[in-house]
Length: 127
Image (cartoon, rainbow, N blue to C red; front, top):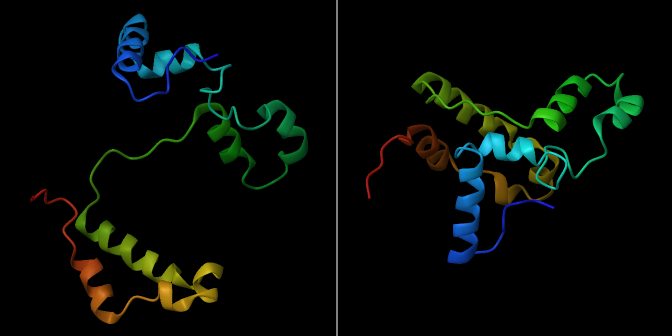
């Protein structure tokens, strides 16, 4: 059973604060201590040593195995302007996946929308 409480209340917030305090306010340490609970990476799946027997020859098994045992990591550095534009262009090209082909009107941006996506400034924080 996880130590954290998953409710939106001040009582739950205080309890979760105490749990984090127990682990020197390190979420990573708190999660590691509870890896055999539903909070553990891949807990919604079978254990990787069991899946290994079935999936070890699949080309993506090393990546899945890592995700199951260590979770995902995401880059925390801002993208360069060149990389951001390239990523957006690739995403726009991807519109031909199966879902988009079934309902093209939902996934086919106009030329004006494509331009506006590429011109968006994702780093400005104006309100």
